[in-house]
Length: 61
Image 1: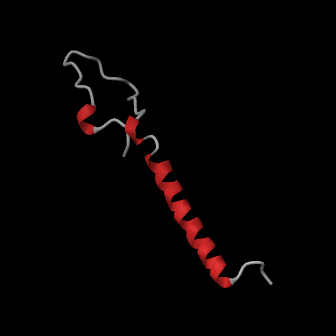
Image 2: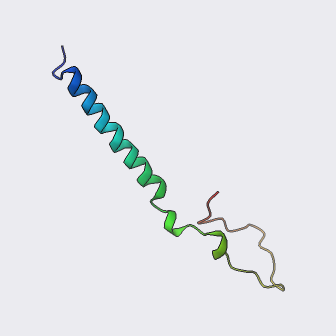
């Protein structure tokens, strides 16, 4: 037999699922303030040279 009753197991499971959901949301949005937004990208000069390897740090899909 388990030390917990059926109602306690269901309550504990609900609490853990809610906490995991909050944790996942926090992980997804943790660094989103540093992401480069479409209007924040610098406009290159016409006489500038294209980069051989584009810098993709901070960009999101």
